[in-house]
Amino acid sequence: MSFKVCLETSQIPEEVHFFKDYRLNNPQVFENSMVSTFFETQVHTSLFGKIISNPSPENKRNFEEAFQRFYFCIRFTKYVSSMIRFANIDYHRKRRKMEGRNQLVFDSPVGEEGQITLGEYVMSRLPESSMVLPTSNPDYFEANLNDPDLYSVFSKLTDRQKIVVTLSYSACELDTEIARMLNVSQQAITKTRISALNKMKRGLQAKPYISRSRMGVS
Image (cartoon, rainbow, N blue to C red; front, side, top):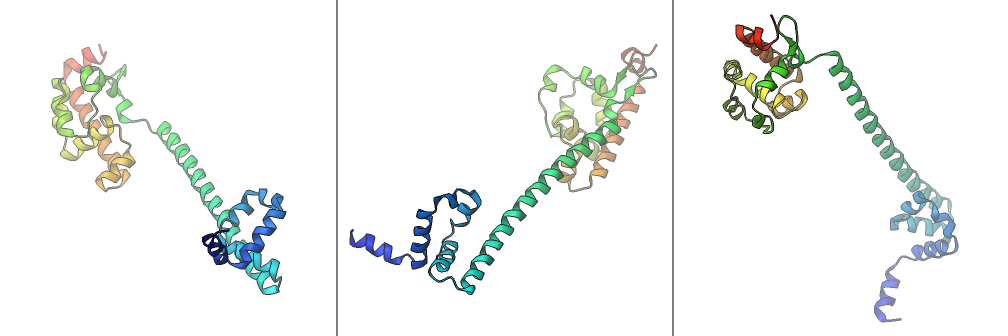
């Protein structure tokens, strides 16, 4: 054995040597993943080695307390992970329930007989090229509205309404995401979006040739 190896071996605490001997003679104990993980820390191996070399009540107590702290951390981490997972499931369940209960204004019928929704009309009037180029810039969105009627009603929205409508229906962002971007409440975004769509809807219905020939009203 070289001098370097002898020096490194001498630097290892005596308790660790006792632990290594125990592990070598009892490999089945360390097949348990939790036990194996616990002894990856040298402090824990030293505490266990002290019990083997000197099984005093104090050494036993120190080892038991170390294992209890380790076990608590394992259980607490597992608990927090479960809470996060169930909270995520509950959030998506509530969101689907709310979306099913509250129909979007974008999906509301336009025209007296309700043969077409506002969303269907808007998408039918958009050129195909504009539907494949989502944007979060309201100025760009407005400039690319080739349909004069849509351009007219959209241009009459307030700046805030334009931003919300663009983010909602071009960038496809949720109200919660838009609220976070604009640093306001989700309720404020929802109110602004609905108000903007109602304003656009009234503007489109005010055009006789749209409300009758385009909306399927006789």
